[in-house]
Length: 220
Image 1 (cartoon, one colour):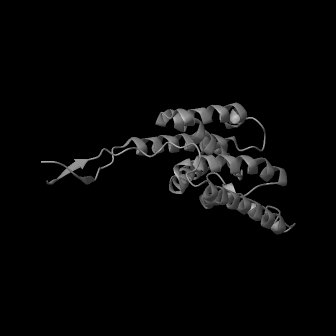
Image 2: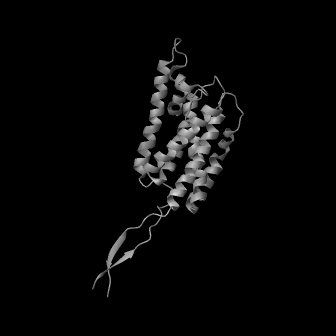
């Protein structure tokens, strides 16, 4: 009797709807959301007659080379209490659901959205304007959640996208120019970043993976 090598075909990762470690995902998103509030409180405390913009001066300033640093900081900054309250719940919910592929995938998806949104705003925003707010990331996560099931051909994920589309799809109108003082560029390029991230995730799942042989006993 000699061992016979059988090569088992690799299987793509499970196309989950909820995070594989829900408690960890909840802690990460609760901490991330709390960070937004801490930054906002610090921002309020630093806003004085001598510094009326506070930390918001570090937002994205289109076409200003020094404003490129705002790509990193803008999603952490908010202009008012109503601004941060309007973003917090959807930020928490969409970020949690976007972690269904695990923490590593979520970090990659969020990074793509963050950078595409920020750079898109810097290129297309009006000169002299300052763009801040986590809504660019929120729009990116929503677009990612709405389209990932189509790219990955996952019926459960498509089902979740239909539910999210029913309850939250209306906010996607925010990608169009409209209300003064609202960064539609951030919304638009955040959504584009989410679509790109969904395509990249689906591509990584469907890419053939090298299989390792496993030895199982066989009869000779």
